[in-house]
Amino acid sequence: MVCGRGGWLVAVAVFWVCILRNVELPGLYMDAINPDYLAARWLNPGLSNPVWLIPGRPLPLLGNLYHGMQTLYAGLLTYGVLGTSVTSVRVAQALFGAFIVLFVWLALRRATTKPAIAAAMAVALATDMAFLGSFRTQAYIILAGQAWMMLGFYLAMRSVRDESPQRWVLPLSGACMGLAVYGYFVFLFFLPPIMALVALGPGSRGGFRRVVHWGAGFVVGMLPYVIGYIELAVAVGGVGPFIEWMRNSLGALKPTEGSVSYLAGLGSAWSNGRMGLAGTGNELMMLNEQVSASLIGWRTGLAGLATVICVLGAWVDWRANPRLARILLASAALPVSYVLCAGWFGSRLWVHHFTVLVAVSYLLLGLATYWLVARLPDRRWLKGIGVAILGVLLTVNVVQQNRVHAGLVATGGVGMSTDALTAMARSALTEKDRAVWFFPDWGFFMPFAFLTGNKVRYENEFTDDALARHAGSGREVRVAFWKREDQERHREVLERNGMKDVRLYSIDRRDGQPGLYVLTGSRTAGAAPVR
Image (tube, rainbow, N blue to C red; front, side, top):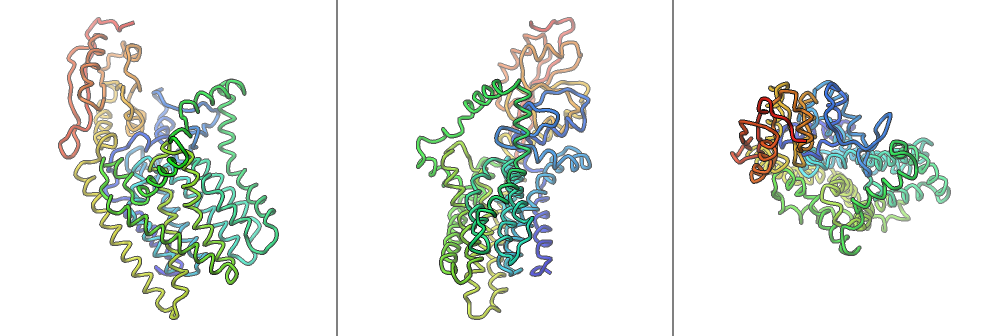
């Protein structure tokens, strides 16, 4: 069962067991729920609370200039059934992870024809905290695109491996890659090796035709992006205003100004890639420390060795086994192409953008293992070697999981990933008609909007005008913020607007440290808002 056709079932089941471990920890970081937080507004449209949304009607398709809204639309059914909670969002986002595990298994099963290797690598990926932790941080939105990318690569691989690939395989592969890019723009970085694999498909002729068929599918997959930008242009008033809007937005983003030179950008990409493979970026976001820093060298070395073996295998087998050689070379080129392209953006890309390399590294490790084992005189060793490799990987992965979860259980998450946000939202729901919440700091309103199901009034700014909008409501005021030293500034605004009984309290983390602060007050009878 494990080594046969059912190997993927075991791997996916293991993945879900690991995902559901302490599923509510840490709390929801703001970028870890964007754009999914909009589901609360759509499912419960009764309150017109503020949202951040790129203009576009009738159906918003852009989560930002560089990613789409697929996680929101894919999660709507889950949120409709399970509600808007930390658990429901983790389940909805992890669905993409389950598909990544499945597609890694499929790719290795097709390329190696060895179910033991495919199952071993899929199970190992399913237990890797660098992969699992990405569905608890802002990295989730990048890995959502990777589900499409892995399916697209599998289909491209299938077009090379099969003797007579079906005509729909290449266009569908291209469409999947287009959807991956719609998911997040960084999947453009994988295009060169995948297109090369398509062009070098079976036979010595027809490369251009194969690329055209694949490209047609890619254009179809990119249509949500294209339509989203057309909607944006219409919403801002036409071509001229759209160009100006884009100029201002890109000027603020400065996407290619992250490093002083391309070499410096490559250095940044290399450093972030190593941290992404080890999962330490996720740990910084959840715990503000690199729990697994000692694994950076191990993970990088293993991925690097697998890449070198795949390149060697492609060179040795280029004539004897050209189909496998092409797959080995294209697979080895995936991380290389990604890092080389990422170098142009330098430090504008951070560690979470490199979590895509985790699944790719297991694909490479499976291919490298297969190529080496195929040279053994006795093939009966295959299962034994697969079990041994899996044993080592599982041991390392489980130890890393335990260390990270120990930190999560002890603190509930730190910084802007604290589960004090969850406690705040639950408290707000118990008094939803009595108070209005104000969020002067970044990091509050999206988790709050989602976890309260858009059933509690809030403002994503704290100004005299924002307070005036609720002056006649009779509701108490709550102001949430991160730093205790900011309380005097916020207290001054409240008192200037006629608030009385202004009090400060904190919502603590699990280790007793303050997670966030809240000022509460009510308007003095007859007091007029500041104008």
